[in-house]
Length: 85
Figure 1 (cartoon, rainbow, N blue to C red):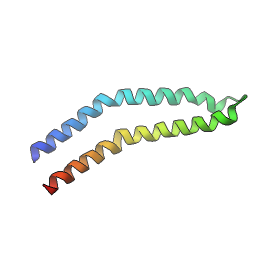
Figure 2: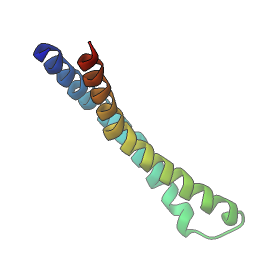
Figure 3: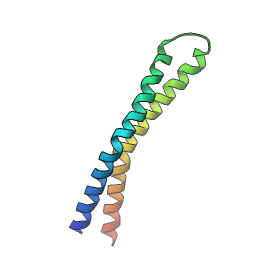
């Protein structure tokens, strides 16, 4: 069982190191690109400003869940499944 835990930890860390940079690049560039929409006025800004807030918030929340919650949930489920066996 110790070998399985070591392999699981190695897989989670390797997947995190592979996926972290592309995930951060996509979410940060999109969020930074939408920041001017929050501060610039003009025609249609009443509709675009709330949409930009929702997109930035969703990307931030999604990045958090993808980097922290999903690997932890997978780790706990794998530990729970090994405990049942």
